[in-house]
Length: 169
Image (cartoon, rainbow, N blue to C red; front, side):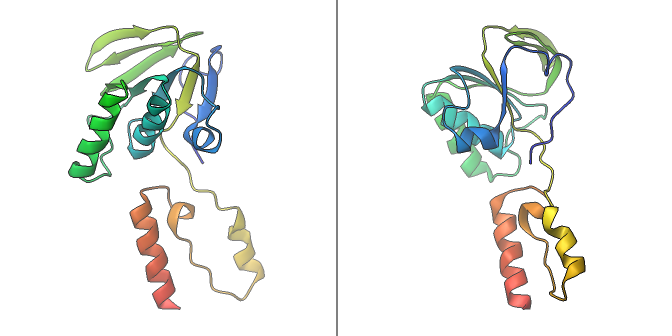
């Protein structure tokens, strides 16, 4: 589940606020001019999906590198696809505030303002959802908390944990 950041103006903006999960659940969740907040693997594939649909997309990444959890080869080809879709990437971003239709931020220390956008996609930090955890106390069954229920991250880690849990049974 995405963790909503606390940034000045984000919840007062007139832009539609959705998550990367919303975008993959409903292709029409985002408008035509989109700001993706988060430059990890999920943020970049979300931006690629939107860019591939013909939407104007910018990605704001707070970190120095994009999609650090990906192999350099996979990251390179994803970045190539993003460029082909016209997605604009900003890194080392510090968001100052969201406006009614845009964002004020710095990228690598340079002040920038983007206007004319209709959607913000939150695709940064995710929190595990452990609603079923209480069932373990009510059962004699042994539970293995794996994948995103343990901590959200790349699918390869989740598959490896599932295999390890399966072998231990």
